[in-house]
Structure formats: structure tokens, C-alpha cells
Image 1 (cartoon, rainbow, N blue to C red):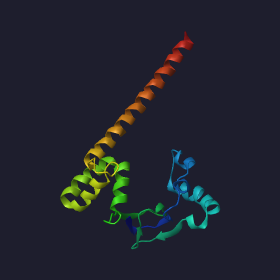
Image 2: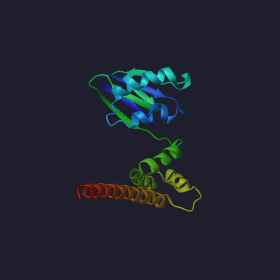
Image 3: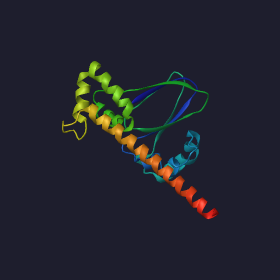
Image 4: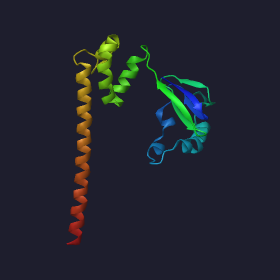
Length: 183
């Protein structure tokens, strides 16, 4: 969850209800683009959503003005376009109720952040620290949250190294082929 308070300017929001498939909000053709700008999403992608998406999955739209605050509940995909030069303040929010879902998403999506967060939870919110421990690994209590995070980081590093090695291998193969064709 998050809130956003507009100080100056206007913001156009498109908010998708929970359960909206990611493919509707972020179709692969859009994600493959290198120049993904909010203006393009609103101009070119949103009209198609309005025409092809069932009514219950279409986004709610609104504009926030200076002095207004919008609350975006967890699970709501959203896209925002600044309509003017805009200044706004945003703060993410995680309640005790939604902690398990937020923790699980953070551990897999922002693993380094989850490591720092877990350290803070241990001293500031031991109740949430214990929930994180219970959710670690497969949730069977055999793995600590710390060990789970370190394993995820090691897996990500190994994957990155494999990707680099594959890239080097392809480059070497191309260079070898180019040398062979010159000879």
C-alpha cells in the first residue's frame, strides 16, 4: 500500500483492481520496449485496454490536484502520469495484516532490501521478525529467514555469472567465426 500527496501540479492515475492479470497492465510487447514512458502507456496502451478488457478489470481513473492525497491499497496495479510540472510525496505502507504478502514479495523481488529490513525488524518489531522466520524457505521452520535471503542472493549472483559467461561465449564464438571467414 502507498499514499501520494500532491503539492504542486496534477497527476493522472489509472488503478487496476486486485486480480487484474499482469499481462493486461504490462503486456510483453510493452515490456520489451526500451523507451517505456508513462505518456506512451496512456496514449497507446490504455485505449486498447478500454476496448478489449472486461469491465471488471478496466482501470479506475482519476486526477489528483495540489492538496489532495490518494491511497493505493496493496495489490492494485497503477500507472501515473504527471500532467504538469509536479511535486508530490509518496510513502509506502505495510500494515501488520498485509506483512506476510509484502514480506514474501520483498524477499524475492528486492532481496538486498529484505536483508536490511529483517535486521531492523529483529530489534524494532520482533513479532514481525518471527513471522518472517515462519515464512522462510518453504515455511516448514527448517530454514531461517537470514539463511533463505543469503541463498536467494547467492542464486541471483550465480545466475548473473552464468549470463555473463554465456554472453562471453557467444562473443567468442562470433569472433572465431569472423576469423574463420577471413582466412
